[in-house]
Image (cartoon, rainbow, N blue to C red; front, side, top):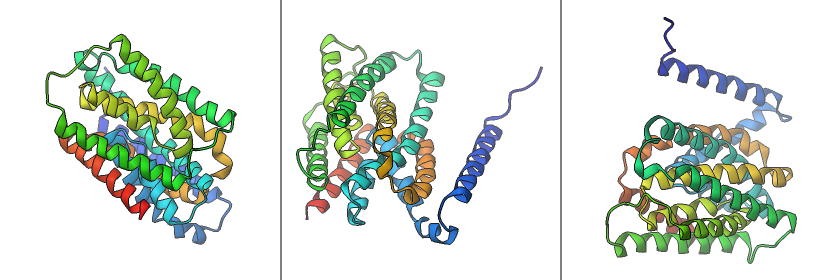
Length: 289
């Protein structure tokens, strides 16, 4: 009987294939290699953003947008470039979480609504963000202020849920009203995502946590929905992408998305939420100063 290749060998094979593809992309880039090397530092940005995003359910834009604002990107460049990087990081995270579900959680009662949550919210989110692009609906405010207030309010809301909601038995059953709320989250979260490059994943994660669903399932659902959303959006904004940044931040995000689930395994639910809230509060406050 032929033995299946070891997990270690498979990872090495996939890693080698990734490095080769990236090297070919770098060689074919329409810029001088020495000039492109000025963007190497963005690899760390992509790694950091994807680690944070895929371990909390937030989109990587919560890291990317504040940085791009500091670099004086236009709003269109910041949003488009954030979407492009997330296509790497959120996809890697989504695949990793989905594999985790298929291998370890398929029969687990606390994860029985996983696929239904993803299906309902993803469809609604694509409708929401597509409507913004199709009808050219303007953001209520500038990217800078909208993102800052979104981060602050979300961060404060998370802290409130940690200290004001008493722990009790985790939820596993989706109720009729959950579907109503998830459709609304998808529609409005999709619109927010179109304007800020983040939104639907964060709101979904918070809702599922408030409803006391399993924290890992909440994060996994938010990551997969965010991945689907950024792919639905990138075709609308690709002409504004700052590709020199993506060339280095994208691979970093891919690695971050791959290893993020491991980080979740080392953090308790409370620590994970506090980590998420702290970043949102800091980034929102700094942006408003």
